[in-house]
Amino acid sequence: MTHTDNTPGTALVTGASRGLGAVIARRLASDRHPVAVGHRSGADAARRVVADIRAAGGTAEAFAADVTDETAVEGLVADVTARLGPITTLVVNATGPQPESDPAAVTWDDHLAQLTYFVKSPTLLMRAVLPAMRERGGGRIIQIGSDVLERALPTMSAYVAAKAAQHSLTECWARALGPYGITVNTVAPGWIPVERHAGASPESLAAYAADVPLGRMGRPEDVAAAVAFLASPEAAFVTGERIKVNGGHTLG
Image 1: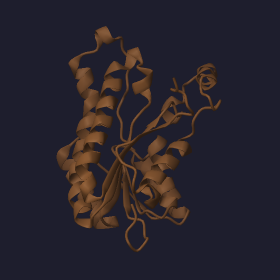
Image 2 (image 1 turned 30 degrees about the horizontal axis):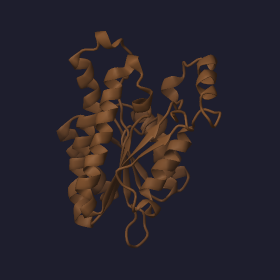
Image 3 (image 1 turned 120 degrees about the vertical axis):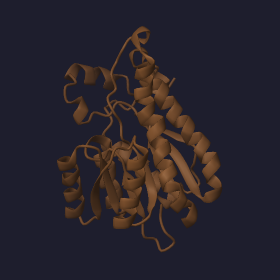
């Protein structure tokens, strides 16, 4: 989001020490947002992201916090606000392990592990940034979802269910927070190879790309561009949406 003086406000990106989060952080910084690079344990990687942003002329600081813990989230938002200014853009990106399992073997604890990242954490973060956004008369909340909702992968049922719940939050929050000038949207990538996919075989990448109408794998920059749009003044009238960034992979 942008202040009335046209200076972009502070953006907090969770899970930003690597992968999609790091690229999103760099992109928002290039759009002149002061960026809080959130991370849980990747301190060295987070510092590298901060150094990259500063080398390019941007403003950034790294912040360590467990975004599934209520006290830690409250402390995170307070620290970011004190060091970079009020958060006007929240990018909910942090994720945990995404194990595959036959549905018959999935336990309630497996579901809870996914819901902790994709329902509990977003809720804690939203509640923590909401008072300042309401006071300032607006803000942007952008959740990083997934196109697995359409793909209905049978070995990832707990993850798929949690991602569906996450976007339901987006829709509910869009209705509830719209009167305060706060937009809430989901960016839903397809398979975008990042560090965690370093072991993917060339054959699996080629097979996936062959099913994408645009004929290629997505890049983290594709996701970052969608986030940057939703954080910009141009997206002021877009809320409650789920924008798939997957090259048309899930078209019927």
